Length: 484
Image (cartoon, rainbow, N blue to C red; front, top):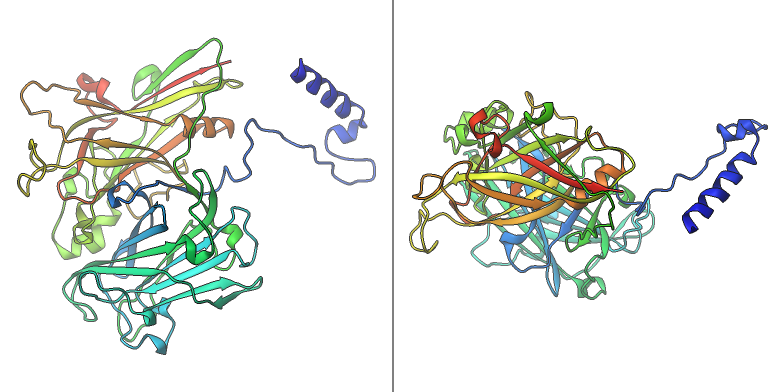
């Protein structure tokens, strides 16, 4: 009855206006704007977002990325997590030349291999840096194991309302690297910078689960001693360092979807070849046919620009050792939503992939020997639709909009006794992402699948849309439950 009364009064208001006002034009020539009201309206729902898990474990971190692989460009994975006492943000950059300033006071820290972490401790961020806006910068420096980054190689700034001012804020930085040598012209593989920001340093206590801040990430590059500085990459792509209102949203904890009460429950299965559905997909990077190539020219000039749209399987792989990035692989896939009727509500949605193998040997104890396979924390992230299956590569693939689901996946191999195709069914609950896309009227929902692993031999093989007809059950599948 309340809903009917609301509609009645809204209708009465609209039709009490002049005909021109109903269609948006008032008699005096001014435009009239009527509100559009969405179910569960969230003014930040369209923002790029990272959902940070509450954990002390590196392997369980959320993961986002930016940049591209090239002789003079860096691709960077960033892991984010929070604990009882601090926010932890870890940058891992694939970099052919690692250079740092041996006299950091002589120039800007960002002019060398460095990372910038931007935070605003309120989700309502200003157009210019304010008192809740912070900028943390750390330049890379080769350190011994456990050695803290010297104060000269890091800096903190706080917003003044119009810009930034240097501020004494307690935070720690750890660095690491892999390659030939630092500050020379030999080929390296990359560097790592980890920020640890205590809440107490910001005058705060541990954020409550579900709290939201704003965040942006910048990876800086330098490829020679003489310079100039190389290309910097930022996440999210449209963010501006000095405009907190353009930064992404940082949520503390994973999103929780509360299913609505539903009448006339209906199930919809979307899979390549079922009812004419087309599900484009492609792995990018170190796919099964391009896994861990060692040729220097290939990894810096070819690896990031190759397309693997026609492969019948996909590899999902990542680890803590940045030296092995030519083995890393992400998987992109998209599902059409044209068979999902309008005017419904989403009860649930599940992404189903079939796991048939992976890196390393299946061991009863993963620590038994170095070649043992390890479990993976595999994340599903929403990404903008519109990418093309036949042209997507590591370097041009869309950046993640939001990490929406995670699943710990144990090792499995189809060749083991007693196993058979289509392999092990793995499911991610993507109800939150599907409901969000549906409420926004999207015709497609697009995902990237990637891991935040730390161990070697943690890669996992899954069947792709191109797998043969005899294995069609193993193709990526989206199962949606909806109703009235």
